[in-house]
Image: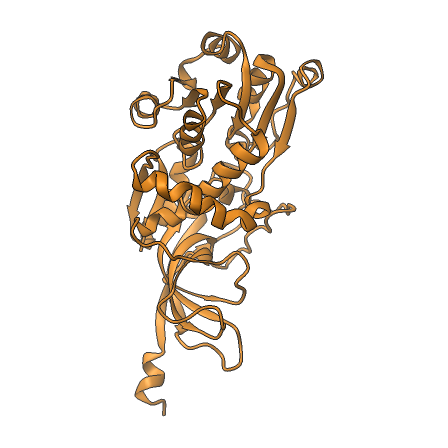
Length: 347
């Protein structure tokens, strides 16, 4: 018979389970909640496993790609019938790893569940600065923040006075890129999908201007209106027709950082791009961006961003969903633009 301590070391574990691969717009029914899984709050003796209690989960557009049975050089797809994974903030309950101790706060890849057993610490970061909201480590101080920093400063290499366009500009990454551009002394315009988001870009994040792409029948004409002299830097989050229009409006030696293409994630076939010769005519450089390549720069990023947060010079907006049971709806909402700012689930 198990003793009391052994009983206390096993708890039920609520989880979000992925059902099966899809080739359409995702639905809440593509996931389900279960409490059938039990987890031991003790690590296997001699292992380097870490047991964590998850506190915050990050909803990110790339997760839709993992719901299709297509492998990439960045992510492997989800396995049907298993727990969904994503970035999150957690507290260490038990550790067999010498670099992590009970009580440590961490951010990195975790399961969409109450407790996760982490077999690897690759990409797991200790949280040392707790004078800012812990949820920020799903966003401005986590993967999206480092993505914005690396994409703008390392890939785009901005110069003062340049013309910058950001699509999906009110999202987790876009809102930061626009503010970084303003700190550099650039002219910045963003696009978003509602008038409320457009106003947010102009009033809270300090963009010089913004427009609702859904109200623009001709994106090429819209960009010419906001950038009569052309675009030096485009931070790409959308793809499709937006990218095609941007190519026509790039300046000579312009740079495009490709962070994502959310308009394509739910299409059975990707849209074609027709204006590619512009890349030749204007010597435009286009570079894809994977945040993992920049993990070694994370401490430099923190040194850069934390003073701006503490001084109120960089602002961040979160959209908070309460409870693991509401995580599927929060994730699906990303693809209809329901969220305002970074979508976070609080456990």
